[in-house]
Image (cartoon, rainbow, N blue to C red):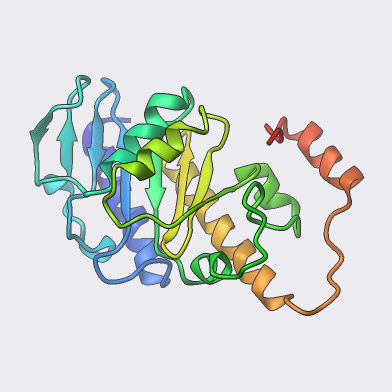
Length: 215
């Protein structure tokens, strides 16, 4: 994909997320690898509903800002995924309501934040790691992701929002939408004896779709 088309795609997908209430105001950030190995990143303080393709932050392969506005303050999150996951071609971070709400509950499984309700979250996300609360922009968030050694494609920042890496920006957006939808289902089923996927059913999904399911 040409850089011009990638810029347009980033802004189009970001607006779709914004228009459907998956992030709000000036929250959220998104980035993608360029064909030459650099990065395009949403600027700091911008709304997903009004990103300008020409003003995206442009980094070269050495990580230097060479064009566009100043990038999101959450750059340590993005670079941590790129540096530890060879398959990461894009990273998306949202402040989606249901996933944040689920992270507030005291009985969340830190190693597997989402309960196995459907096969789709397993297929697109694997295990989602629940990380503790960090002040927004704290480089320690990136350190926490690096501490996972590339084993997770998705994390949930407690009281803050999800972060997902994907092979492409479209794949990353699809996966983070699946995370939010599954969190919404989990909240809807609170207090109800839901039939989650059995270990045998999970194994079948993991095997068929070659999912990295080790914790």
